[in-house]
Image 1 (cartoon, rainbow, N blue to C red):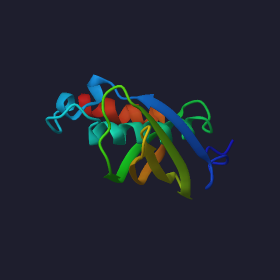
Image 2 (cartoon, rainbow, N blue to C red):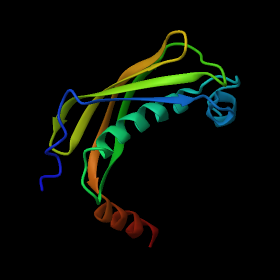
Image 3 (cartoon, helix red, strand yellow):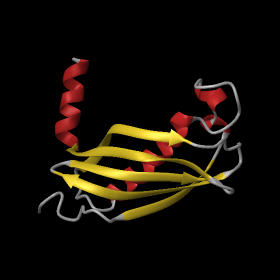
Amino acid sequence: MEVMQNIRPGLTREITLDVQEHNTAAHVGSGSLRVLATPSMIGFMERCAMELLAQHLPDGYTSVGTWVDVRHLAPTPVGTQVRLQCEILEVEGWKVLFSVQAWDEQEKIGEGRHQRVVIDQQRFLKRVQAKQA
């Protein structure tokens, strides 16, 4: 089976997550306020892209994030729902480029691009173990 055969431009996914205290700038240390932290928003975007790829990959394969270029446009308080959408823009070998966007209940809060690389889990973990030895 060709690992990348089902991964193509135009595939999309949308997820909804709640902003919790551990997602705030004050908690993660990227700021002092109790609003959605930029690193948390980026993590939400990466999750959307990772889940989209996971739907189309065979067992034993996953993806890792390798690049982000994101703008955080507006603050979002704790307790607010955030909707994330990702779309595959390009597939080049094992690399997959996504458009990522985020909205809270009132407005667009983030947008950008994100790249992931599809990997063989066992091979990847062998590299990790070699670093630990």
